[in-house]
Length: 173
Image 1 (cartoon, rainbow, N blue to C red):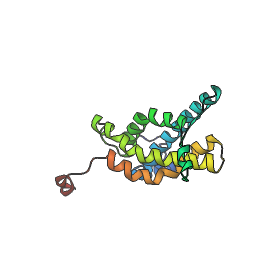
Image 2: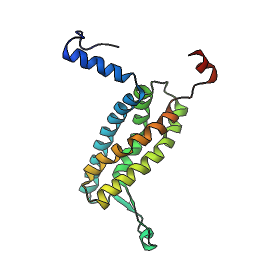
Image 3: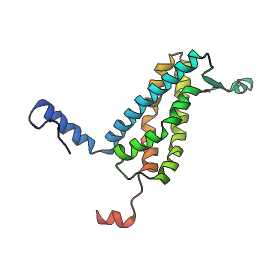
Image 4: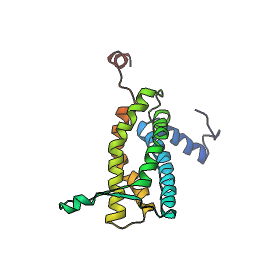
């Protein structure tokens, strides 16, 4: 661990010490990686929404046929979908190196999108809820959606990113 503040008794030295203490815990590192990925996702989604608006493209895929049979009809936000898919390699890499501090693997990278299915569904539902139902601006919806799905995703992603310990590894500890 490289220390930025050499004087551990200073205010910033104490803050840094607290930070590194928390950094030892997976959930804290998960929040950091998720925070970075979330900010990138929001920026990219807002950028794509701006492009869609500028070109007068409809940013939604609607399922109106569901309303015709009396069901609630959610929709898919296309700019959010594009940002989500484009950032999958970034998200996996952040989870590997920051959250779970494990080896990057092409096999696990190819499996990683499976963890994104519930995340994508959850976030798209939140975008729909905030933007369509509650009539919030798309940028606010893009910010709130990943925050609301974060607790669920920690457990799903941990299972898919971090390899399970083998029995002989557990007995050695």
